[in-house]
Length: 74
Image (cartoon, rainbow, N blue to C red; front, side, top):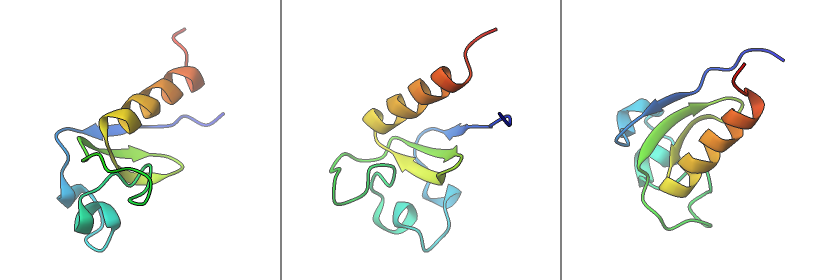
């Protein structure tokens, strides 16, 4: 498995995202999608393979849990 870097920017920063992205223009949780989540983003995250996403608190928790499962402490 290739190493993966996850970068978390808190608080949410629209400038971290592409200017035309949903995360930057609508300031919503792009990890879940604006049609499925009405929570405001709390963080901007670079999360391969998803790229740069905005994350509500629930999405951020899921991203961190996913990373811990993929890369357990050694």
